[in-house]
Image (cartoon, rainbow, N blue to C red; front, side, top):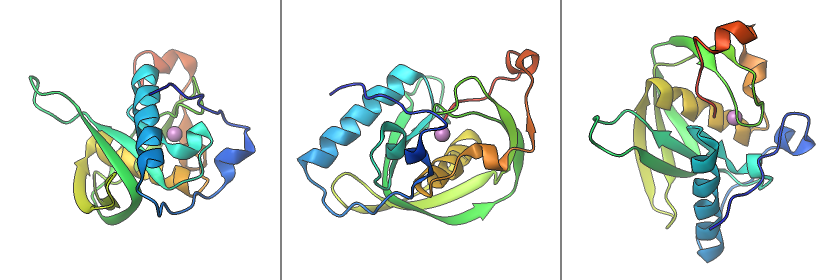
Length: 168
Ligand code: CO
């Protein structure tokens, strides 16, 4: 397990489309473990493989909608697809690859994904609120897109402290 370097806005890799994962082997497992370490150290709620320069359709999302005494759940999503969306939320969003910048982005309130786990088995998962936002944000990373394209208004530095969003 190791912490990998998160690349930033301006790096051309972030604009590339990620490729499907076809091998569910030890190499994939150590990549996922490294991504978990990297996400934990960053303090963010989501990380796509492209952000550590690996152009594969993988992202991690930290499910923070858990009971107070329960640990947060780390979702490993391989070849994920958004299969259902519902409602709307408007709020601040940031990105580990765009440090220090936050903007207002409208997203669905509820997002259901279908993905494969580290063994290649399919699962479905429904996320609400921040988790739904992260599913959308990370899915766009896999298409080579940053949240900046979706921002309706960037937040001023003095707004960030009071209204700080989570970084994906
Ligand atoms: Co991001």
